[in-house]
Image (tube, rainbow, N blue to C red; front, side, top):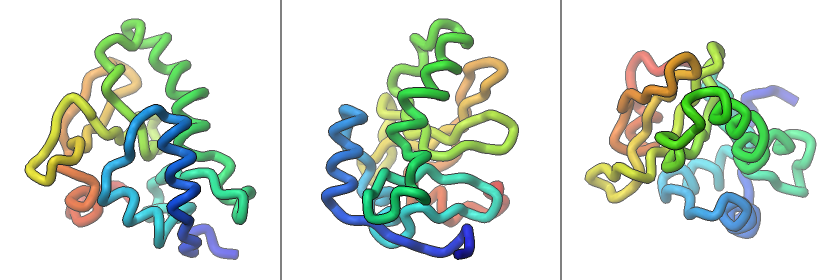
Length: 141
């Protein structure tokens, strides 16, 4: 099975992830997950929602990353206070994360996409929403 093969997921798996995260996922990300759950964007690892029908491919889910590696980073970078509105959805190979910033909404009323630096804890706005992020020229991956 190819790493880039699309697997999709179900609305129930997305609802379970939202409950585990304590927040609603952006609509454009949800639409992408319904068709592409578990798929990478080139070299960029996009976190899936856990789906029991494809547990092996979705084990490293967005909720799992949020509870484990993301929390560890936050403890090491300024106590994580400034990052409380961020939800990482993809990890860049350097250790930085692409995140939804729930403190900022774009024209689509979805959280903007930011790149969070693991070295400084600073963010840089990358796209007004996930749909726009998918179409960025020069996006890693």
